Length: 145
Length: 405
Image 1 (cartoon, helix red, strand yellow):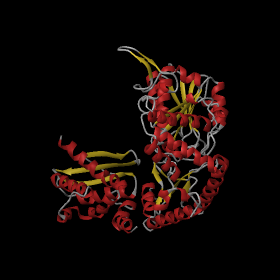
Image 2: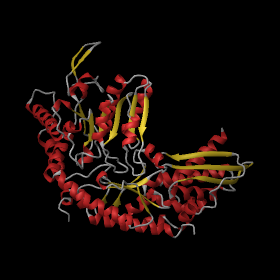
Image 3: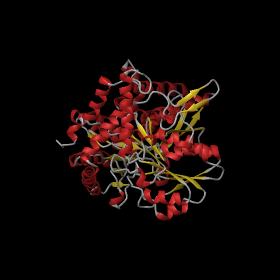
Image 4: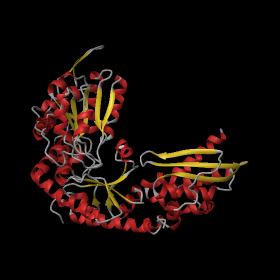
C-alpha cells in the first residue's frame, strides 16, 4: 500500500483531475491520437511549433489517473524544449519506466515526470503511463518524415 | 476459515480476496492432485500406442468424455468434443458450420452481451458469406426483452449466438425461450455456457440447444481444456475444423477420409491431463451440489449488492430482478477510473477485473469505456465482501479530495 500512495501523489492527482493542459489549442501544427484499446483510454495531443521549439501543447481525451496525469506532466516538461531535447527526454522517460537508467542523475531532466518512477513496480499500469510519451514520440517521428 | 475456501491452496497461502472467477477460477486441492496423479501414473499418448500405458491414457480420456456427457445430459459421448477452451469451440462452429451453411442475406443474430469470442468469429463468417450480422440489445434493466427477441430473430435467421450468462452484467438470459423461438424460425442456436455452467446445472437436452460450449478453467479445472457439445446430425454433417493426426481414417497423397465423431474434430495429441482435471472438478462440484453452490453464492452476492448500494458514489450495472442475476457485479466509482480502482484494490489484496471484459460492443452500447467487475464463486464469503467494500471506500477517499469543487 505504501508504494501505491507514493504513486497516487499530489502531482499525479492534481494533473489527472484538474489539468490546465487539458484543452484545445486555437491553432496547432501537429496533432496525434493515442489509444490503449484494452483500457479504452484515448488522448489527442496538439503541438504548436516555433521553428524547432515546442511553443505550445495541449491534450484532450479520457482515461485513468495515470494516463491523464502522465500526459499533462509530459506537456509541462516538453513545452519550450527543442524537438531534439524533447526526443531525448521522451527516451529517458521510457527508459526510466523500463528500469534501464543506471545513472540517477540522468533523470533530472525529467523534472516532475520523475513522479512516475514507481510505476515500474506496477506492470499492469506501465502502458497507462507510457501512452502519451509513445504518442508524442510517434508525432515527432512523423514530423521528421 | 470457510469450509470450502479451505479446499483451495492458493486462497490459503495468499492473503488475497479473489473476486475474478468470471475470468478464471482457482482450483481445489483434489483437482491439482488428480492431474498430478495422472502424470505420475497414467501418462502416455492416447489413441496411439499398443502398449498398456497408452491404452490406460486412452481409457482415462474416453471415460472423461463419458463423464462430461452425463454431466450435461448429452445423449451420447460422441457428441462431446474436447477443445482448448470455449473460444476454440466457438471458432470450430463458426468455421465448420457457419462458413459452410450461411448464404447471402441469411442472418446471424447475437446478443449485444456476447464475449468477443462469440462475436468476432461471426463477423468474419458473415463477411465471408455475405450474410448479415444483427444484434439483440438489452433494456434499461440489462436484460433482453421478449419484444427484442421476437423482432430480431426472423425467418431469415439461420444462426443465433447467445451467452447463457453475461460476463459483464451477470444477466441470466432466458435461453430456453430464445432457443424455442429460434427453432420455430428455423435457426440453430449456439449457446455459450462459459459463465453459467460453474453456477447452474446445464441439461443440453432440456435446453434443446444445437451447440453448447464452455471452458473448464472457469469451473475449477486446469487451464487449456474446453468442451463443445453438438447435436449429432449437425456434427456429422460438418467438415473438420483442424486437421492432422488422429482425426483421419485413410490418408492418401491427394485425398483423406475422416474419422467418425468425436475424433473428426480432435486433431493432434489431446489434453488428457486437462480432461482428468475437468472430471475432478465435476466431482467436486457434484459433491457440494449446485443447490448448495447457488445458495451460498446468493447469500454472498446479495450481501455485496446491498453493501455496494449503501455507497452513493457507486453505480451498479446489474438487473434489479434478482432471479435473473448470476454472480457477477460490474460497478464504477463516480469520478474514478476503473483501472485506478483496480490498482488500489489490488494494493489492498482484492483481485477484481477492470476494463471492457472482452465485450467492447456492449461497453459502447452502455456508453462507457470500462467497468470494475467483481465476480464471485463458491469459495467467496461475506468477509471477502467486507474487505472489498473497505478497499472501495479507501479508493474513493484517495480521489475525493481532488474532485473539482
